[in-house]
Amino acid sequence: MATRNIAVIVGSLRKESFSRKVANTLIELAPASLHMEIVELRDLPMYNEDDETADPPAAFTAFRERIRQADGILFCTPEYNRSIPGVLKNAIDVGSRPYGKAAWTGKPCAIVSVSPGALGAFGANHHLRQTLPFLQMPALPAEAYLGGIAAKFDGARMTDDSTRAFLQAYVDNFAAWVERHAAR
Image 1 (cartoon, rainbow, N blue to C red):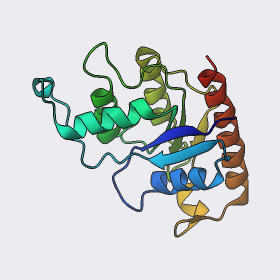
Image 2: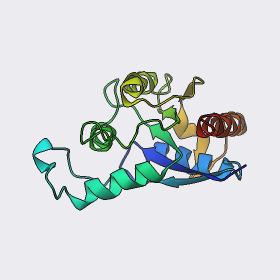
Image 3: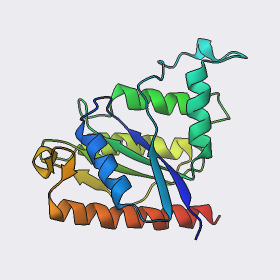
Image 4: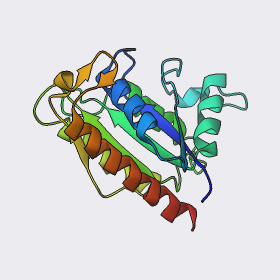
């Protein structure tokens, strides 16, 4: 089995965000068939179609190329106002342009949403999921909502064994999903 490159998109800019901690836990738990790496969003300018010239912003070009090189995408996101954070929406918009040349097209993906609250960012997970058919991204049908996330870490280390076991099964399932779609 080939090693598949996975772009991990964290929907939070905060260095100590729980979404980033979960992403790092998933990277740690990933099977050898996946090489997972966080693609940073902090330097990605807000999308403006006026910037789509013969020489678009270098950050747009670099981000799109990184997504194109990926064999799959793993989204880890918090919920802001029952939706996805603006930085994540902006990344989706940047990667979907210019029209007809979306970097996301055909990339198998999965979503893990996290929240200190009980619902595990259900709204963000489903809001993001609504955009994926338009982007032609086959999404892993299994859903992952992690509620009460603040109590599951000691610093950067996940200490909750049942959540860790859940994430292990989820990333293993995602690896099979990526392989299934890579074979097409």
